[in-house]
Amino acid sequence: MQNERHHALDNLRILVIFLVVLLHASLSYMTYAPEWWYVLDPQRSLFFTGLVLLIDVPIMLIMFFLAGYFTYASLAKRGPSVFLRDKLVRIGIPWVFGSLVLAPPTAYMIYYSRHFPVSLWTFWATDFWGKAYQQSVYWYLGILLLFFALTALAFSVNQRFAAWQRSVLRPTWRFFTLFVLAMTAGSLWIGLTHPLDQWSHIYVLVFQPARVPLYLGYFVLGIFAHQRGWFTEQGYSPTILRWLPLCLASGLLYLGWRLTLPPTVNTVPSKAIATLLFNLFSFSSLMASVALFRAHLGSETPFWRSQARNSYGVYYLHPLILYPLALVFVPIPVSIYVKAFAITLLAYLVCWGLSAAVLTRGPGLRRMF
Image (cartoon, rainbow, N blue to C red; front, side):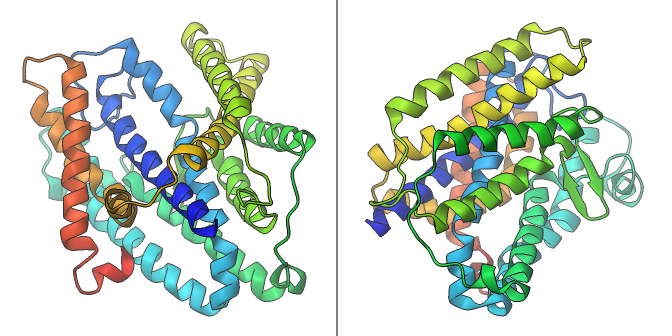
């Protein structure tokens, strides 16, 4: 049963990373796309706006939850020093390399796709360190490394945390409700001055300020869920019939609210409703996804094993393939639905192949990926 549980959660991570690729592809074709997005196709559709709004809500929070879920067992087995040393290799080095070497040419796509008369070298030496600074998808690795370091520190200095024994404790609906409300309150507090979709950075860490409480909350929830035996044979197991309807209903309500409310309406009540629906959809998506994968998609086959082994590599590489593909497809006279499907599938397959052939086999690289 332990292996089945791990396979289901590993397979869920695969889906989430595919959705990350799909999200980044869809942004090129959405109505009201961010002005700074790397490649914007002249053709746009409200369909992709809705798709982006829905996918963007739960995917990274599920990633933080899954990371937290597997953290304590690894930390307790290896000890904080070995645990942190491993994370510095697997997360720290790829984060630094991605942020300093891969993010600049990715960000340069904003200029290149719009034919700005600025060279990559000039861009890197000037605007990248100022108004155009970002870390592309590698921001997640920096935040995750911080959470791993804080958890290892807590394990080192807090004896009660270090001695925390795993036991089965089923959560109540009151617990779920309080978690969603706590995440809503934290996000709304910051969201009064920073919209949910706004990006910012403090020194070397890049993040969306209104979602920081959610990053931490879902990571900690993952640790708690593991230590309380969630998703085990004796522990709590979410059911599809209970969570999928809630996921669909909250998703539709959130989408309807975001699409029908005029952008100029920024009152506290409107932000509170949007934030509550955002968090309800996030949490129900997590539970519905776990329920679905445990019930129907928890098998281990050569296909799933290869996907799981290379999911990190796909996440890491896909901006380098996806955005140039989106630019290549701009002048092609076909439907944007065909374009979005093509660049998503091509980027995913190419990154899967590169990860399998290079990242997971190259000397030194396979320790990271």
